[in-house]
Each structure stands twice: as structure tokens, then as C-alpha cells.
Amino acid sequence: MNKMKDKEKQTKADIKMLGLKLPTDPRWVNIVEKNVDEILTDHAYCEQKAASTAISLIIGYPDKKELVHEMSLLAQEEMSHFKMVHDRITARGGHLGRERKDLYVNKLMKFFPKGGSRSDQLVHRLLYAALIEARSCERFRLLSEELEDQDLAKFYRNLMESEAGHYTMFLSFARNYGDRQEVDKKWQDLLDYEAEIMRDLGKEETVHG
Image (cartoon, rainbow, N blue to C red):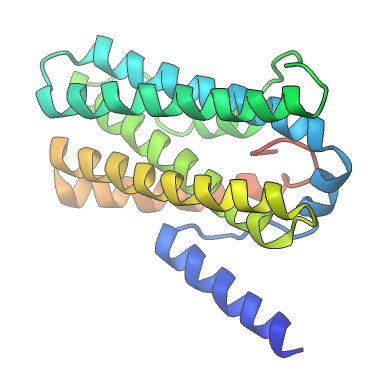
């Protein structure tokens, strides 16, 4: 009983730190346990997409020197994570499967209206990225604590720490490039929207599904 209460306290603490409004249903881990090969394939593509996002921000905003510098480092890091996940897939005797649609990200990116100023578009992209990293961090924490495969659990623990750093970096950039009060309001509204999305997810063997 005490162990369960401790986990609940830790979950609440992690959610508060990340700003998330709704925790992942812990039963999601049971789905992952039965479909490890599927989650690893989906995870590999998530890392690839994260690298692509970093590169896209460099291309779209080459005048933002600090952003370009950090995104160049991030793109390299995310591709190194891709390789780490792919290495695990091959070590298990598998191969990289086909990419699956990320319903979570597709729904999330409908929140902010298209168009607007170049500055607004940048802030919106950074907030999306921050939230995706925050949710990934929360999911990886859950895997690190609940997976029976201790080697895989340790792997996700290490990645969780990286995702937390990425989340704070993207959010800091958004606040630096936009009006702080407006950005914080948009961030809270996006968090509320994301919580509603999460109510219908957690039922598939995907990182965000």
C-alpha cells in the first residue's frame, strides 16, 4: 500500500514539474509489455521526427542564432537516440517497421490557428515541441518504473532525463521569442487542450497513443 502511495505522489510531482494536466493511464504499460517490438518501432520514428523538427526550425528561422545553435545540437542528439532505439530493435532480431500515424501529434497541432505573424508561428511551433517532449518524458518515466525488462526500463530512464531537458529548452525559447504573458497563456490553454486529447488515448502500443 505504501509503495502504491509513493508512486502516486511521484506521479503527481512529475506531472506538476512538466505542467501536464492529466497523467497517462498506467495500464498503457501493460499494452507496451505485450507489444515491445511495436513500441520500439514507433519510438524510433518519434526520434527521427524530433530531429526533423529541429532541422525545420533551423531552415525556417536561420536568423535566430541561439536557436540555430541549439537545434543543430538537438538534431544530432535525436538521431543518436534513433540509432540507439534501432540498435535495440536489431538486437532483438527485428527490423524497423513501417511508420505509423501519430494521432496524438496530429490532434495536438490543430490547436493553434494556421497563419499569423512569423513570430507567432515560431512560438506555436516551440510550444508544440515543448509539450510533445514533456509528454514523452512522462511516458518514459512510466516505462522506466513499470517495465519488467529491467534493461529496457533503465534505457527509458536515461532517455527520460534527456526529454525533460528538451521540454524546458523549447518552452524557454518560446518565452524568449514572444511576449511572456501571452506565451504563458497560450501554454496553459494548450495544456488544457492536450489533457482532453489524452482522455481518449493510452490504448495503443505507441509512444503517444
